[in-house]
Length: 77
Image (cartoon, rainbow, N blue to C red; front, side, top):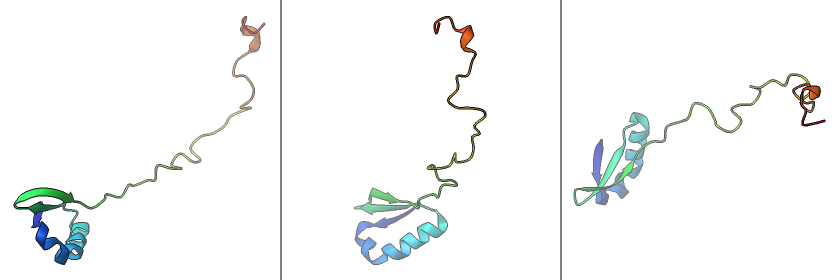
């Protein structure tokens, strides 16, 4: 993991971010040789969570009709 001083950050931030994106390696920002922050590229998800189950289910029969025979239920009579 690469480390850079906080005082050097303003001049080099764009180049450092570009390098982090290309290499995938995080960047540690230090102040007085003590790490204070880590910048790392965001990993892209392979599939969006919202809508990912679209068209994966199948409705068979009438969805309003009871699933079992009502005669078998004594509670309902």
